[in-house]
Image (cartoon, helix red, strand yellow):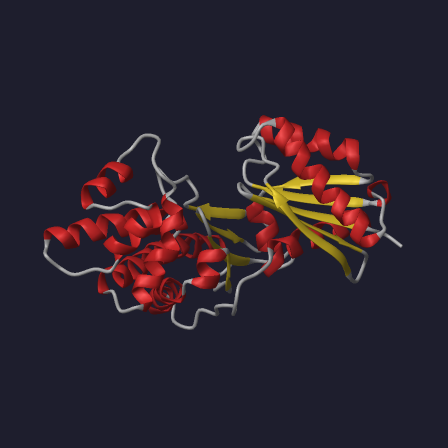
Length: 306
Protein backbone atom coordinates (compact mmCIF):
# COMPACT_ATOMS: atom_id res chain seq x y z
CA UNK A 1 0.00 0.00 0.00
CA UNK A 2 1.50 3.34 -1.10
CA UNK A 3 1.47 6.08 1.55
CA UNK A 4 1.56 9.82 0.93
CA UNK A 5 2.22 12.93 3.00
CA UNK A 6 0.79 16.33 2.10
CA UNK A 7 1.82 19.55 3.88
CA UNK A 8 0.53 23.12 3.75
CA UNK A 9 3.20 25.21 5.48
CA UNK A 10 1.80 28.64 6.30
CA UNK A 11 3.23 31.58 8.16
CA UNK A 12 1.43 30.85 11.43
CA UNK A 13 0.42 27.18 11.17
CA UNK A 14 1.28 24.00 9.28
CA UNK A 15 -1.28 21.38 8.26
CA UNK A 16 -0.37 17.76 7.52
CA UNK A 17 -2.38 14.90 6.05
CA UNK A 18 -1.27 11.27 5.70
CA UNK A 19 -3.14 9.17 3.14
CA UNK A 20 -3.06 6.10 0.96
CA UNK A 21 -4.25 5.98 -2.66
CA UNK A 22 -7.90 6.53 -1.80
CA UNK A 23 -8.35 7.58 1.83
CA UNK A 24 -7.02 10.06 4.38
CA UNK A 25 -5.55 8.23 7.36
CA UNK A 26 -4.82 11.16 9.63
CA UNK A 27 -4.53 14.96 9.92
CA UNK A 28 -2.63 17.16 12.34
CA UNK A 29 -1.91 20.87 12.72
CA UNK A 30 1.11 22.43 14.36
CA UNK A 31 2.90 25.76 14.44
CA UNK A 32 4.75 27.13 11.44
CA UNK A 33 7.86 25.44 10.07
CA UNK A 34 8.80 28.42 7.88
CA UNK A 35 12.29 29.60 8.73
CA UNK A 36 11.39 33.18 7.75
CA UNK A 37 8.97 33.15 10.68
CA UNK A 38 10.69 31.09 13.40
CA UNK A 39 14.16 29.93 14.33
CA UNK A 40 15.47 26.47 13.42
CA UNK A 41 14.84 25.01 16.87
CA UNK A 42 11.19 26.08 16.85
CA UNK A 43 10.66 24.85 13.29
CA UNK A 44 12.22 21.47 14.16
CA UNK A 45 10.09 21.17 17.29
CA UNK A 46 6.89 21.89 15.34
CA UNK A 47 7.81 19.45 12.58
CA UNK A 48 8.77 16.65 14.98
CA UNK A 49 5.59 17.21 16.99
CA UNK A 50 3.42 16.86 13.87
CA UNK A 51 5.18 13.82 12.45
CA UNK A 52 5.09 12.06 15.81
CA UNK A 53 1.38 12.80 16.19
CA UNK A 54 0.69 11.40 12.71
CA UNK A 55 2.64 8.23 13.44
CA UNK A 56 0.87 7.70 16.76
CA UNK A 57 -2.57 8.32 15.25
CA UNK A 58 -2.09 6.10 12.19
CA UNK A 59 0.56 3.57 13.19
CA UNK A 60 2.58 4.57 10.11
CA UNK A 61 6.34 5.15 10.33
CA UNK A 62 7.50 8.18 8.37
CA UNK A 63 10.12 6.15 6.49
CA UNK A 64 7.22 4.26 4.87
CA UNK A 65 6.08 7.37 2.96
CA UNK A 66 6.63 7.02 -0.79
CA UNK A 67 5.92 10.64 -1.80
CA UNK A 68 5.56 13.98 -0.01
CA UNK A 69 4.30 17.29 -1.40
CA UNK A 70 4.83 20.49 0.57
CA UNK A 71 3.23 23.77 -0.41
CA UNK A 72 4.47 27.03 1.07
CA UNK A 73 4.89 30.69 0.27
CA UNK A 74 8.54 31.60 -0.27
CA UNK A 75 9.43 28.23 -1.77
CA UNK A 76 12.12 29.95 -3.87
CA UNK A 77 13.80 31.54 -0.81
CA UNK A 78 16.87 29.46 0.11
CA UNK A 79 16.35 29.87 3.86
CA UNK A 80 12.86 28.36 3.51
CA UNK A 81 13.45 25.79 0.78
CA UNK A 82 16.82 24.46 1.91
CA UNK A 83 15.67 23.97 5.48
CA UNK A 84 12.44 22.21 4.45
CA UNK A 85 14.25 19.84 2.06
CA UNK A 86 16.91 18.93 4.62
CA UNK A 87 14.45 18.55 7.50
CA UNK A 88 12.04 16.30 5.61
CA UNK A 89 14.81 14.24 4.01
CA UNK A 90 16.13 13.45 7.50
CA UNK A 91 12.71 12.41 8.80
CA UNK A 92 10.49 11.21 5.94
CA UNK A 93 11.05 8.57 3.27
CA UNK A 94 10.36 8.72 -0.47
CA UNK A 95 10.20 11.51 -3.04
CA UNK A 96 9.88 15.15 -1.99
CA UNK A 97 8.08 17.81 -4.05
CA UNK A 98 8.26 21.43 -2.87
CA UNK A 99 5.76 23.84 -4.47
CA UNK A 100 4.27 27.25 -3.86
CA UNK A 101 1.09 27.57 -1.82
CA UNK A 102 -0.55 29.01 -4.94
CA UNK A 103 0.07 25.83 -6.91
CA UNK A 104 -1.32 23.42 -4.33
CA UNK A 105 -4.39 25.60 -3.81
CA UNK A 106 -5.01 25.70 -7.56
CA UNK A 107 -4.73 21.91 -7.67
CA UNK A 108 -7.20 21.60 -4.82
CA UNK A 109 -9.78 23.44 -6.93
CA UNK A 110 -8.74 22.35 -10.42
CA UNK A 111 -6.43 19.29 -10.26
CA UNK A 112 -3.97 19.89 -13.09
CA UNK A 113 -6.57 21.94 -14.99
CA UNK A 114 -7.15 25.62 -15.83
CA UNK A 115 -8.98 27.93 -13.45
CA UNK A 116 -8.69 30.97 -11.17
CA UNK A 117 -8.20 30.90 -7.41
CA UNK A 118 -8.66 33.83 -5.04
CA UNK A 119 -6.86 33.46 -1.71
CA UNK A 120 -7.50 35.69 1.30
CA UNK A 121 -6.43 35.00 4.86
CA UNK A 122 -3.86 36.99 6.80
CA UNK A 123 -2.51 37.92 3.34
CA UNK A 124 -4.03 37.60 -0.13
CA UNK A 125 -3.21 36.58 -3.67
CA UNK A 126 -4.97 35.72 -6.94
CA UNK A 127 -3.68 33.02 -9.27
CA UNK A 128 -4.90 31.65 -12.57
CA UNK A 129 -3.70 28.68 -14.57
CA UNK A 130 -4.00 28.71 -18.36
CA UNK A 131 -4.72 25.69 -20.54
CA UNK A 132 -0.99 25.33 -21.26
CA UNK A 133 -0.23 25.12 -17.50
CA UNK A 134 1.23 28.62 -17.17
CA UNK A 135 0.37 30.25 -13.83
CA UNK A 136 -0.50 33.95 -13.78
CA UNK A 137 -0.77 35.91 -10.53
CA UNK A 138 -1.82 39.34 -9.27
CA UNK A 139 -1.33 40.80 -5.81
CA UNK A 140 0.45 38.89 -3.10
CA UNK A 141 3.12 41.55 -2.65
CA UNK A 142 2.81 41.61 1.13
CA UNK A 143 1.00 43.89 3.58
CA UNK A 144 2.94 47.06 2.82
CA UNK A 145 2.39 46.83 -0.94
CA UNK A 146 -0.81 44.89 -1.61
CA UNK A 147 -2.78 42.11 0.17
CA UNK A 148 -6.16 43.46 -0.89
CA UNK A 149 -9.02 41.79 0.95
CA UNK A 150 -6.69 40.22 3.51
CA UNK A 151 -7.11 40.14 7.26
CA UNK A 152 -4.26 42.63 7.62
CA UNK A 153 -5.78 45.03 5.11
CA UNK A 154 -9.28 44.78 6.62
CA UNK A 155 -7.89 45.65 10.05
CA UNK A 156 -5.78 48.52 8.78
CA UNK A 157 -8.51 49.97 6.57
CA UNK A 158 -11.04 49.48 9.35
CA UNK A 159 -9.00 51.74 11.62
CA UNK A 160 -8.57 54.36 8.89
CA UNK A 161 -12.30 54.34 8.17
CA UNK A 162 -13.03 54.62 11.89
CA UNK A 163 -10.89 57.72 12.33
CA UNK A 164 -12.30 59.34 9.18
CA UNK A 165 -15.77 58.67 10.59
CA UNK A 166 -14.74 60.40 13.81
CA UNK A 167 -13.61 63.44 11.83
CA UNK A 168 -16.87 63.41 9.86
CA UNK A 169 -18.91 62.96 13.06
CA UNK A 170 -20.40 59.68 11.85
CA UNK A 171 -21.13 56.94 14.38
CA UNK A 172 -19.26 53.62 14.46
CA UNK A 173 -19.17 50.71 16.87
CA UNK A 174 -15.55 50.02 16.06
CA UNK A 175 -13.89 52.44 18.48
CA UNK A 176 -15.26 50.76 21.59
CA UNK A 177 -14.59 47.32 20.10
CA UNK A 178 -10.98 48.22 19.30
CA UNK A 179 -10.37 49.58 22.81
CA UNK A 180 -11.76 46.39 24.32
CA UNK A 181 -9.66 44.16 22.07
CA UNK A 182 -6.44 46.08 22.67
CA UNK A 183 -7.28 46.67 26.35
CA UNK A 184 -7.04 50.47 26.03
CA UNK A 185 -9.08 53.12 27.81
CA UNK A 186 -9.01 56.23 25.61
CA UNK A 187 -8.92 57.50 22.04
CA UNK A 188 -5.42 58.84 22.68
CA UNK A 189 -4.26 55.38 23.68
CA UNK A 190 -5.67 53.90 20.46
CA UNK A 191 -3.84 56.48 18.35
CA UNK A 192 -0.55 55.79 20.12
CA UNK A 193 -0.97 52.02 19.96
CA UNK A 194 -1.92 51.97 16.26
CA UNK A 195 1.06 54.16 15.35
CA UNK A 196 3.67 52.38 17.45
CA UNK A 197 6.78 50.76 16.00
CA UNK A 198 6.79 47.85 15.46
CA UNK A 199 3.16 48.06 14.38
CA UNK A 200 0.49 45.92 16.05
CA UNK A 201 -0.96 42.92 14.24
CA UNK A 202 -3.77 44.61 12.32
CA UNK A 203 -5.08 41.26 11.06
CA UNK A 204 -6.46 40.68 14.57
CA UNK A 205 -9.00 43.42 13.83
CA UNK A 206 -10.58 41.68 10.84
CA UNK A 207 -13.04 39.66 12.92
CA UNK A 208 -13.88 42.80 14.89
CA UNK A 209 -14.71 44.75 11.71
CA UNK A 210 -16.91 41.85 10.56
CA UNK A 211 -18.73 41.68 13.90
CA UNK A 212 -19.42 45.43 13.84
CA UNK A 213 -20.72 45.16 10.28
CA UNK A 214 -23.07 42.36 11.33
CA UNK A 215 -24.37 44.63 14.11
CA UNK A 216 -25.33 47.30 11.59
CA UNK A 217 -22.19 49.47 11.52
CA UNK A 218 -22.23 51.13 8.08
CA UNK A 219 -18.59 52.20 8.40
CA UNK A 220 -17.42 48.64 9.02
CA UNK A 221 -19.62 47.24 6.23
CA UNK A 222 -18.21 49.73 3.73
CA UNK A 223 -14.68 48.55 4.58
CA UNK A 224 -15.58 44.91 3.90
CA UNK A 225 -17.35 45.75 0.65
CA UNK A 226 -14.47 47.95 -0.48
CA UNK A 227 -11.92 45.22 0.17
CA UNK A 228 -14.13 42.74 -1.70
CA UNK A 229 -14.15 45.04 -4.71
CA UNK A 230 -10.37 45.52 -4.46
CA UNK A 231 -9.89 41.75 -4.49
CA UNK A 232 -12.27 41.48 -7.45
CA UNK A 233 -10.08 43.93 -9.36
CA UNK A 234 -7.07 41.66 -8.91
CA UNK A 235 -9.10 38.66 -10.06
CA UNK A 236 -10.29 40.59 -13.12
CA UNK A 237 -6.68 41.35 -14.08
CA UNK A 238 -5.87 37.64 -14.00
CA UNK A 239 -9.00 36.71 -15.97
CA UNK A 240 -8.23 39.28 -18.67
CA UNK A 241 -4.69 37.93 -19.04
CA UNK A 242 -6.06 34.41 -19.30
CA UNK A 243 -8.45 35.64 -22.00
CA UNK A 244 -5.55 37.07 -23.98
CA UNK A 245 -3.60 33.84 -23.73
CA UNK A 246 -6.53 31.61 -24.78
CA UNK A 247 -6.43 30.14 -28.29
CA UNK A 248 -9.67 31.85 -29.33
CA UNK A 249 -9.39 34.75 -26.91
CA UNK A 250 -12.79 34.15 -25.29
CA UNK A 251 -12.21 31.32 -22.80
CA UNK A 252 -13.86 32.01 -19.43
CA UNK A 253 -12.34 30.19 -16.41
CA UNK A 254 -14.21 29.09 -13.32
CA UNK A 255 -13.20 30.79 -10.08
CA UNK A 256 -12.63 29.18 -6.66
CA UNK A 257 -11.78 30.55 -3.23
CA UNK A 258 -9.61 29.64 -0.27
CA UNK A 259 -8.62 31.21 3.04
CA UNK A 260 -10.32 32.18 6.28
CA UNK A 261 -11.49 35.61 5.09
CA UNK A 262 -13.36 34.20 2.09
CA UNK A 263 -14.71 31.37 4.22
CA UNK A 264 -15.99 33.47 7.10
CA UNK A 265 -16.65 37.04 5.94
CA UNK A 266 -19.68 36.87 3.69
CA UNK A 267 -20.07 40.61 2.88
CA UNK A 268 -16.55 40.78 1.47
CA UNK A 269 -16.95 37.58 -0.54
CA UNK A 270 -20.32 38.67 -1.93
CA UNK A 271 -19.05 42.14 -2.88
CA UNK A 272 -16.18 40.50 -4.76
CA UNK A 273 -18.46 38.04 -6.58
CA UNK A 274 -20.94 40.79 -7.47
CA UNK A 275 -18.19 42.97 -8.93
CA UNK A 276 -16.75 40.10 -10.97
CA UNK A 277 -20.13 39.02 -12.33
CA UNK A 278 -20.91 42.58 -13.40
CA UNK A 279 -17.70 42.60 -15.41
CA UNK A 280 -17.89 38.98 -16.58
CA UNK A 281 -21.57 37.93 -16.88
CA UNK A 282 -21.95 34.19 -16.59
CA UNK A 283 -18.73 33.71 -14.61
CA UNK A 284 -18.96 30.45 -12.66
CA UNK A 285 -17.93 30.67 -8.99
CA UNK A 286 -17.40 27.48 -6.99
CA UNK A 287 -19.22 27.27 -3.64
CA UNK A 288 -17.42 27.24 -0.31
CA UNK A 289 -13.64 27.25 -0.05
CA UNK A 290 -11.09 24.70 -1.20
CA UNK A 291 -8.61 22.92 1.09
CA UNK A 292 -5.04 23.43 -0.23
CA UNK A 293 -3.97 20.21 1.49
CA UNK A 294 -6.04 18.26 -1.03
CA UNK A 295 -4.05 19.86 -3.84
CA UNK A 296 -0.78 18.85 -2.16
CA UNK A 297 -2.13 15.33 -1.70
CA UNK A 298 -3.13 15.13 -5.37
CA UNK A 299 0.38 16.22 -6.31
CA UNK A 300 2.03 13.67 -4.00
CA UNK A 301 -0.03 10.84 -5.48
CA UNK A 302 0.63 12.06 -9.03
CA UNK A 303 4.37 12.32 -8.40
CA UNK A 304 4.49 8.68 -7.34
CA UNK A 305 2.81 7.56 -10.56
CA UNK A 306 5.19 9.46 -12.83
